[in-house]
Length: 176
Image (cartoon, rainbow, N blue to C red):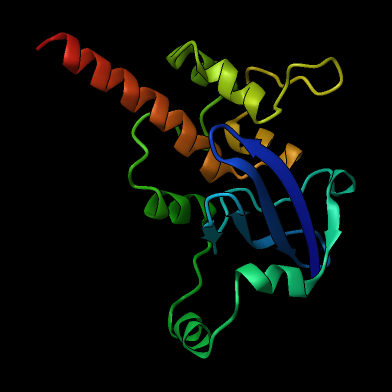
């Protein structure tokens, strides 16, 4: 196994660190994101995007660093052994993130940008696009862009969903 890590700012939460566990062909087996300021930990056992793009832009990590945030317990090993392995990353992501109402990893950047004007601000806050050497195409998917830049796709979509929830709440409040 090989291990990598990345860091990224998360609006309103501080810096998040994502640790990737990959096989020798750089296929992502699982990853964990940890935000020290809030203590949040999110483990993704079956990532939507399995290809680790541009590993040279990530930092090398150790198995110990990964296990610090994803300790393997005997009950976890037993549970994994008793369940059939999920072959589709997308179905695993959908199961994990049922609260996603507006965005998903397969949505194009262009579609996402048209959903709400603040989407561009969120992408900028996650350091996606915005400079000449790291622009993103409107036809790329959210999942593809996150994989290329080492951003936790689940965390990004959660933030995007919060924008839409706030808009819904503002609309409901205005109608009262």
